[in-house]
Length: 399
Ligand SMILES: [Zn+2]
Image (tube, rainbow, N blue to C red; front, top):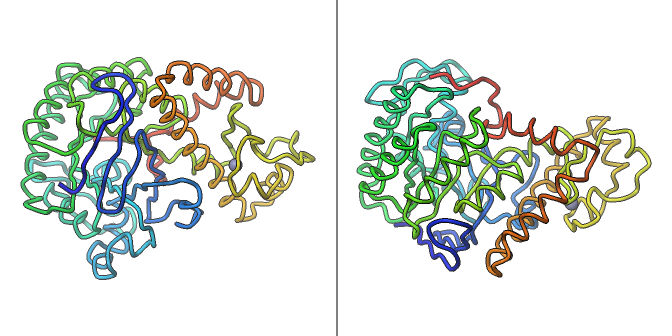
């Protein structure tokens, strides 16, 4: 397998700290991966990411398969070389974007037939095809094609989707052959039904994967339903394998999911919020367009030492934002991404020193209590609404 995972703190349930070794270097976990939809974390260069503690990025198979094409990326030396990113890359299976972005034609046992959102051309994603595409990218970690269970879904719908996900997982695993570089992760589906989630986890473990993702969350279910799924997963999935919670990531989500034994995260939230002018600080969320910042000479967060906070004031950023100057998108994205990386670093330190519960209470108290009045709770609710959408997706998943 292309990756090895060593857990050095924690076990099956509760917070864990570990190290994921990949062909492109090691990643300390729990870790947060920024989303580079089109082989680019929007508005940031690879150097910006490296300078701000990012150790792994996610790229979207659906988008890169359609443009510029996986064979072209392969000819150009693979995804790492193409985007000048020396560290690990995880690619998703494209399934989520097919369901949410593409004009879905038909799901059959063979795969998913869809129309490109770019030019209307018709494509078929099969489990084997999706593995082949990610092999051409040279991804460190690839994901199996799954059937995303919509929310709400009846038990019968969730069961059918879960069973197909398992059959596709087996075909994906077989398609990998003896590829020693590519680490393929299985995805647990099953909606909010405990026995389906459990059956899916067990089926995937039987097939055998070096890591497991929890999919189909953050799509509209209640927060307690989502947390319950994570708790069942922690009890079922093998302690020795990395666990990846797909597509969810408010700071509150990350803390709650780490507490329930998750190791890897990705979300468009820090970059999307950055571009929308909502900035994360250790004392809550801040909307840079607010008139109160017009003459504010402080950095976004006095506790932050990112490039933006070392060099620019709130007053200047507010001006750039209102003037829609392109620079603001880079500066705010850098800050938000760094906030996430520092949060993960502090989480790892707290786990290592057995102080995670205290850390998490103190972090959430400060993060939610202050900031702009009432903004914390209000924005957390807004964030939840799109925390599991791809960068360009605005449609609801319809299967
Ligand atoms: Zn900063």
